[in-house]
Length: 399
Ligand SMILES: [Zn+2]
Image (cartoon, rainbow, N blue to C red):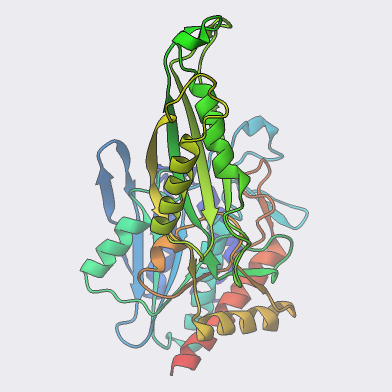
């Protein structure tokens, strides 16, 4: 019998039983602390504050004091369970049935954390030590506003002199089965609110009014009509989606005074936040002069564009030893060579990439954020073996 928690399932059950819906810690960091301390990790738990947001507790654990430094990043917070009664088992019970463990956070991403801890435990158990420095950066604010989480934890670590050589984020990256996909980059994200000013009036007397909806339609058409690009070598095409159009006018005989729209752009490495903003502003300025929808008006559309934060640039991790060692580990365990992908939404990797090369690999994402979120016990074992093989391989490659 090992002295250490080398079984990812038991670690994961302890984590799932803590209802750590963002921003609540709910014992999840205590459970992780309890698993890490016997392995020789020094654990610290800084709480960060921000006006207008809930305080959030985070965890930084490090082991070793010299040699290359590998960091694992993740989050113990989870999204709300939704209607608990719709679940096969209570969402924070951590029940096992039919070869799977059920519970909120099973794949996103308490399961990834449990596998990494078990992987480290197996190496320490077998070898008595690790061949370098290993840390865990765990936030409790990933699924929420993300202001008191990874960004501040990275700054906090850097201020204390921590330097990382590579990072693995344990988010669920496999669409269907273990070994499908590593995320080696992410598209950028940029959002804005567009407001068009008009002049309120009677619909029967449009010459006395100025309908802002006409202007808004013209401007949105200009944003959507031409594709931003055709994609790049490593990324799919950039895409703009209008997310809302708001006029809020209940009447049928009043021309409204104002119309608003929101949009988000997911963009590739052909753009930076700055160059994309310039392109959008150019398209709007040009379209504002288009008077086709504004009969009788000889003035351009009056509008105001407000960029929303945070915006993030696209990034791509070209650290071959990192992606290759991880791909090799995945192939050794699953027999499959993973795709290297930049698809999907943003993640905390967008902040980590400013500190060290970062890739993402975790469990199968199919049930994340859903009722009956669950993970196959076989996948937990497989991910633990992948992480174990990867950790050994990564230090060997740097020796
Ligand atoms: Zn997640």
